Image (cartoon, rainbow, N blue to C red; front, top):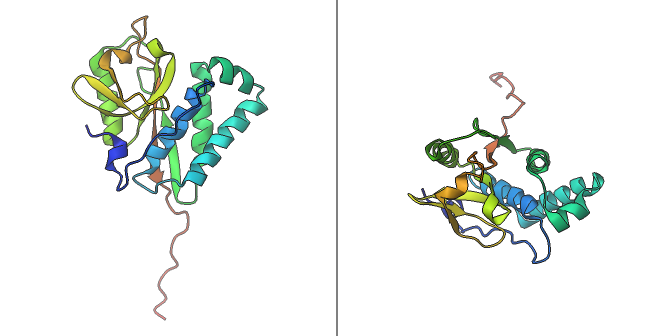
Amino acid sequence: MLPLERTASKPLQPFVQGDFDSLCGLYSIVNAIRLAALPVRPLTSRQATGIFNSGIAYLHERRLLHGVITRGMQTRLWISLARRLCHCAESPSLVFDCVLPPHHGKPIQLVEARTWINDSLTRQAPVLILLERQDHFSVISGTSEKRLHLFDSWSYHYVGMNALKDSAGKASAMMSIAGRAKESLRRSAPDRGD
C-alpha cells in the first residue's frame, strides 16, 4: 500500500523533533493529523504549528510538560492528547475522528492488527503506533508485505511487522486519525421561482 504522504500532489515531509526532547507522542499526533487532512484540505504550516502549540499548552496547563519533554508520555496521555488535538484541528470545513482499534490492549494475532491497519489506511486514516522496542511513538503511513512504512519524527522510514506486538504479546498501542469534510448544517433556501 503506497504511503499516504506520497499520494499528495506535493509530497509531504514529517515534522522532526529535536535531539533533546521526548515529544515524539506530540509529533506523531500532529504528523498524523497533517496526513489525515490531505484528502480533504491540506493543512498550512501555520495551521500545523497551531495544533502543535495547542498540544504544548494542553501539557503545560496540566503541569505535565516538563515530564513529557524529559521522559516522554504514557499511552493514556497520548490517546487523550490525540483526541484533544483532533478537536483543536477542526475547521469550518474539516473534522477529525480519533479511533482506537477493537483489539486495543488485548492479545492479538499479527494478521488482525495488520488488517485493521490496512483498512484504516485504505480510508486514508494514518495509524499512530507505540514502537515499544524503540520507546517511540510514530505514524504508519503505508505497508508492504513485511514492513510498516513510517511518517516519523525521528526520520525512521520503516519497521518490521513484529513492531505490531509488545513484549507481552499484546497489540502495540495504536489508533487512527481520519479527516473528513464537515457536513454543512445549513440547508439551501427553497427555490421560490423568482
